[in-house]
Image (cartoon, rainbow, N blue to C red; front, side, top):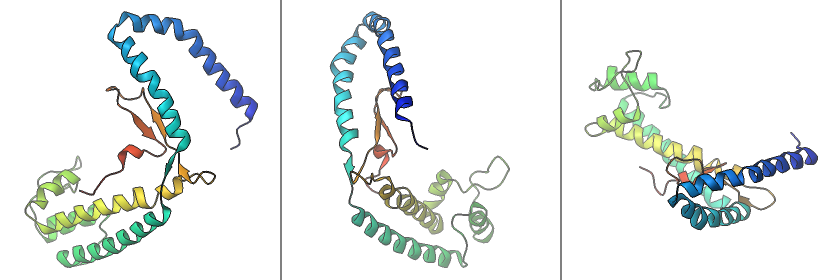
Length: 198
């Protein structure tokens, strides 16, 4: 959908006007909380310019490197899937909780540590981690899930987030979203990129 510039300009002007009208009231509330006024003045306000610069400049990524990593992950995932099916003694869909449940609890007769609300043996990650301490198949399934998430969430999706005009990813950073005061980032969340897989 195209945004009409006049509509966007009016919307932005109204938001600025509301903030301006609230300034006095909010300054009084900050002053009444003493320590928050200093935090706001010396940390939060200066950070606005830094975040604006980060958003405007964006983050450069190397699409070729991500493509190569994606290919390597695909190869590893295929090999891992074959190994999982060999250990299970049959082919099955690793993404199907029902099929995994059948393999783990019926065929291999692993202990049922937890059940779902519907009374079925659980294949949730925490349960698989417990089982992985003693059994190979849950460990392999967890490794497959980890690599699959890495591929689908990062190596496949990040290149799609690159702005065609700048060749960079322009995430949005928020200062006032979390209760703890830490930064958050969206579209995409660049703070959630793992440094390694589990």
